[in-house]
Length: 177
Length: 106
Image 1 (tube, rainbow over the protein chains, first blue to last red):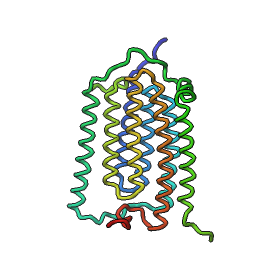
Image 2 (tube, chains in turn cyan, purple):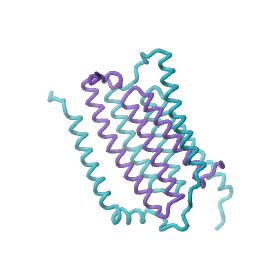
Image 3 (cartoon, rainbow over the protein chains, first blue to last red):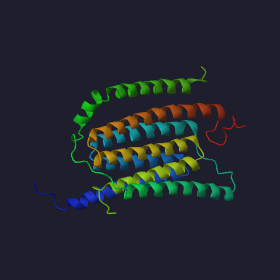
Image 4 (cartoon, one colour):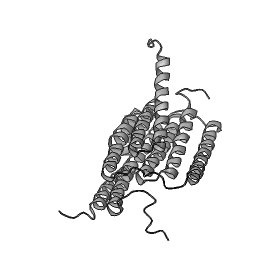
């Protein structure tokens, strides 16, 4: 089959867009002062992650990432933002304390990043000789209904209990008008 | 390190970056919703690490994908519970800043 001309560059461009969207979204989610911008950053980060999952041969996961994270989790957080007006009041801590705590947080996260990135890049990972299956949606479905059927049922139970618990907690304390 | 989508290093470093931003946000955010968003970033870092390992270093590539699906389901459950708790806290305190919730502070 003849390759599309310049497909190498198109793939590299799309991959760079996915990586940049993930980095920019994560930075926005952690650093933005308005909470609603943080939620938008989380959504952007999840779109980038969906692209990365596609490059990692997991198209089903990339669709689920968009569906669950962007479609459900971000929308739910936006509902909570509308209900609870969570904008951070201007900080009452002194400038020196803010600099100190910010520097400490930056040092901790920088150390974690440096350590794990160094481990991931320098470790001699072993490649397997052969793959047991292709990792397609059909293989996942078969594994879900045979090997992992018990965990699958437990997850559905956990989701049911979470929904009921959320209803009970949010309902408590409301009175009829 | 070459910047290519066929090498695991790019994904591993990116997962480490997501974890680091999540930890930074968890320490520095002053409202509960901001801390929840930072927690979601840490979940995403774990998922990206799982899918990377699953793509490059594992004999059965269905297992990692199934595990990431479970992580997503647990994250959704966690967000629904946490948000309802946040709404309840806001109804009682009129604020969701983590500094104001100091009733149990000795």
